[in-house]
Image (tube, rainbow, N blue to C red; front, top):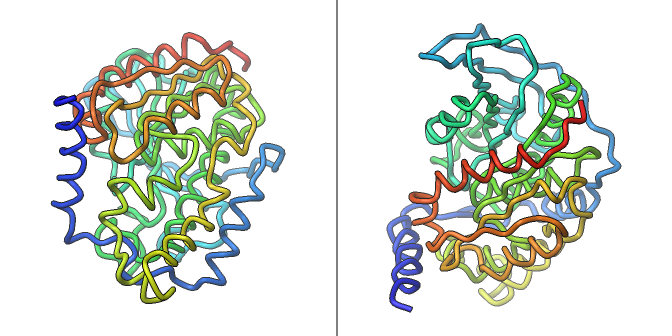
Length: 334
């Protein structure tokens, strides 16, 4: 009980420290545009055609035993600000035998994660194991941050929906490109927001991928309206638009209704999916992590004895191990 309280206190303490970074300081944004995005989220399906990519790669460079390349392509998402329309990638793989196709893990960004520094460090043991790692910069973050946005704090709820929809569409496109390049196995992963987005992408591609969503759940309503993240949101600004905080929360929840992984079929290789949760998470309710596991028959559920923040700091080795285990469970299909 004491340990659980300490982990949850750490989660809540982080949101207190981040009070200067307010999410949605410009409110809901254009609500007509927001509702178009909500509708688009509800219509994404596994059967949708996978976009063809025209990737542009910078010259490769080496660092130790790792080769890295920066790449770009035009996002298939249409509703993005100009600064966010080019997708930025970082490809990491071992130098030895670099010409042959490799098993690839795609790592998506956590909330507020700008640039590649943190994920590059996380990827090092995976590259050392012989895998390639592809890191994707989220729209609205880092090199894709729109003019006028301060840091990674999204200015409107509409921007949140635009970012997450684009991340899923871009993830589908990247997975399709990797399959067309005949990489034998693909695993999608990420932490927190990155884990949720990885789960959506794995469920929405028409071929077998592994998936390791960590710090994620089947639905997101509670994350935004009741969990620790809600303490970082500018509820006063949102309430002014709708009349009260209760009305703002109800409207937000109605927008979030289609944002649930369990609306979609399980990934085609659910046995190669390992869901990793934190038992004392104040951001993502553990019951939502359990719900995601139940919705993917054949998947495995693993727990960190941690909160959301302490799991991010202390659970990286377990996350890396889960990714390698997911590769081992995937059949070679390409």
